[in-house]
Image (cartoon, rainbow, N blue to C red; front, side, top):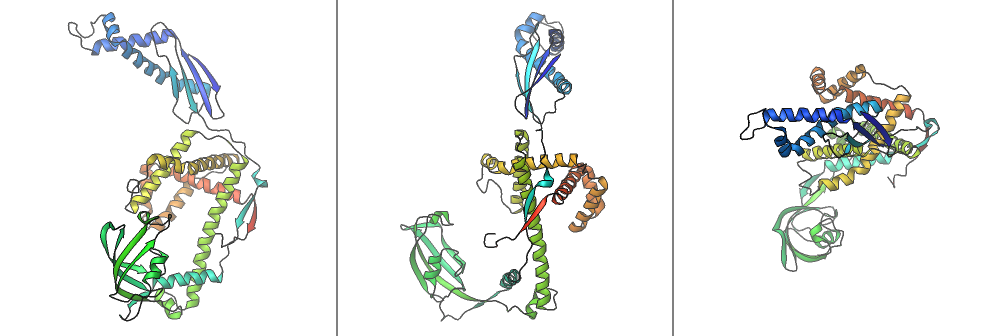
Length: 434
């Protein structure tokens, strides 16, 4: 067997394999012998069928079977002999195996790229300063108070004003034709929140309980409701009820109602701590993405399409799982898998490049993760999920998932190493932009 390996691109190789005719003839002979024992032809006993009849009826099938057999037997050996490490299935070109001739084929496949790492100790990466201001705490308190807001029905004599909640029945039509299922009943309208439109809120303001309303609204082309876009919609309905929001005062009593807090100050301190934790987590995540982006920019390289496709499928599967948890699916949202593949491709390519670079850095810096570290991580995960460690450990044993967990820990340790190595420029983020 002759083997020749050539480079097509930096990540694509083509191997040419020539199998001598003696080997081909032996395999074809074996195939006909086996066929003779199995095939049934009228007038002949199994194993006693003349070769010329077998050749006449089964030549193409035998040659195809022998082609597959020889390829499956020689390809792994040829790859090993050439010292190649494919990461994709091969694209094979061949004329097939034929009696009395050498059998040759070309197999093209992708390999891992060679990565020349930049001097990461000289890289400068911006990281946002973690700042929690008093106004951030106050905004969170306001949002929290809205969650404890109650509604009180107003007297019939008062008209609707901004900030009220109105319960209404109404119908919609365009050019005299009804829209949707007809009448909408008991619709809860937060007046001023532009739930339908700003014009709707304005036109219904002042209406009283049990008062009818009727008006037209011209909707813009980019309106949230697709069926209303660039249309003049006629609304006709009745105000059934007007409710006034009773927002609780933010004081010590409010803090006690919210949770186990003795005073408003204690609640504010807890909110500040939580905001700092969440902000720190986001800042760290943004910093790592920026760091990886710079590493990729400083070290451009081709990525095997097989790896990008594999990662794309992973992202789509994760998306489908999240949607199922919400009672949704790609089909229900009318998202085509082909379109989804194109949408996630940039993220998939970024993920693959990031992974390959981090793996290369981990090798260079001798960064490893041990089984002991993985078990310690799993103990913390079990505690956080309220599970028994031994049960969760058995799940990992059964699934053979320890390598994945150790890989995750190794990646995190590599990112920590880079964080402590690169030059970090602290910047204050403009909250108006973010």
